[in-house]
Image (cartoon, rainbow, N blue to C red):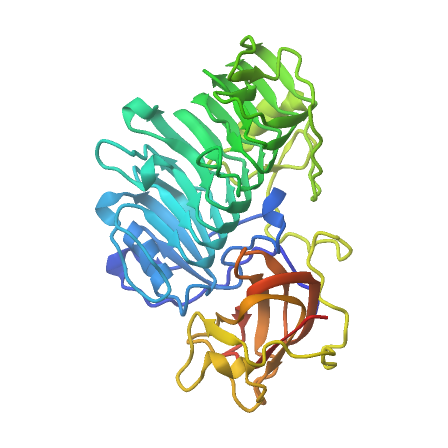
Length: 520
């Protein structure tokens, strides 16, 4: 398997046959797909590419968004959905299908992967309708507005969160969005950007969050510490009471954000959370950093921030402000590169770049807005954070026992006449194929098994059909390796009970004869 070409966001025009009545039309040649590449922690764990390499469709209703998800070959088939117009309760209904699990009162991204939702044309507004991401991975949301989502009153949606993530979510990039409410909890609103129950590898960038009681949280309670590895950069938080964000456990990187009118508290690091807080601009606000409303401490590393007209409370039993002279009380190591603007220019840079319909402009650390690169360069091939396929000749099988022999097997779908079990029966004359061009197949064991190498063998006559793939630890959602083409791939030894081969791109229908696994 060749080294992966990661973080390339491109959308191939497709011909998804959906009825015009649902609000889906074919993507026009000039339609803009997701631009730029993921940043921050969303670049880790195999990266976040969304629907890159898949079909592109245009949707003008919530029902059409659900129909596009449900019309895929399976739940992992890449797709870019370009959204234009106002999405609301009146045009959003539940759609059923094997590749989706949707609901009528929210945009539901549940038990799926490899999806981009991007606003185009005159803009995309999700009005009183939240976006819910659950048990999903590799999701991009870009250039959209989500407003006035309520948890009480009428209508209600998504528990009151503009964008909410929960239950084993991995690799989400939310970029150039506007998330806003019209009041706090007493008015029926909750968080603008919430993550809970094992959500990891997320970036929120170039977005505006405003006019809400709660900006967002990581962790639903002091005991929900399974979340983390979240980056917040070049965002504007304005007229927010608290939670910008609230951190419970995990690690966060918070840099080059502009905070204005934080009325009660700001970055609330508690319950063992660690935050690296770099070159942000805080103004006209109260208690912008510390541990608040709990006696369970959190930690922070600070550098280069500007505090302009910020007031601080006196320390108390459940209040531990970082100011008036914020000092670091931990260190946080960041595994990715990033360009840091000086805090003095952050208000101007963020004003020119953050939010929907701003042209997707970004910053390169020069304090001057830049147009996005539509075709990001490949990562440095020596980047130690990228999963590295084993350099062994792909025609040379690993040594030792094939652990797949006698193991169990399942998957996302299977073509007629094929079986999941064919990939672990030791017979290259049998094979599994997904119902479409992409899909996943897994081998599984009744007890934890150590694996560090795999060999994927395609059936005779179909060699070369697999174009891109991911190897995923099913239990944690962690991406162990990515790449293209069949052959041998290695990764640091991991103990697991289920290993998934997720085919994300193929030429025609792939045929996997054997999915072999080895301890070394």
